[in-house]
Image 1 (cartoon, rainbow, N blue to C red):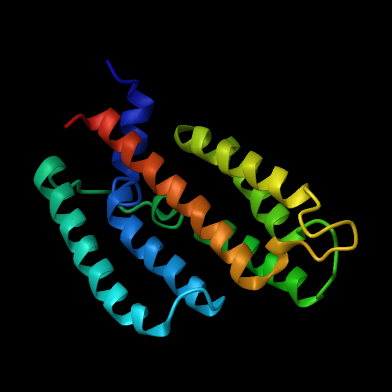
Image 2 (cartoon, rainbow, N blue to C red):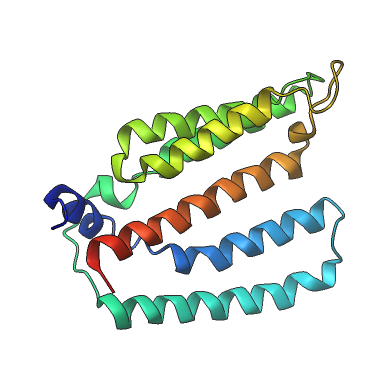
Length: 185
């Protein structure tokens, strides 16, 4: 039997936990950052957006067909659970990035990683994914990947945003697994 607090959490955050619906949009954001970094051609963005939009629609249809629709009581916390902390972390990371420090560590990625570790404390059902994201990000941000004189590769705008997107994809996958384990097939 599934823990009643986990069932309550899943029903309160049902729409946010639909990870398969988020993954195509996350993948498209990764494609856009890859284009910004010069790794892919710009012509891939528009077809990629179309494919991502169709995949989101298919995933939403899958969730509705499999689990139905959950009527949620309006709860400010449930609707905006991660909006302000994530916005704050991204703002701080962008401000640190604007200082243009050539450090052997990535402060931007470290800030986001500490945010993920803090999130694990407050969002218990998502803690395994947040701990994985936070620990991996912390290790990567503290390793002198750019050499002792810096700059760290994850201090490049596109790179730390791709690191953030990768963490978001892991969280979306875990969210889907949590929803599936709690509500069943």
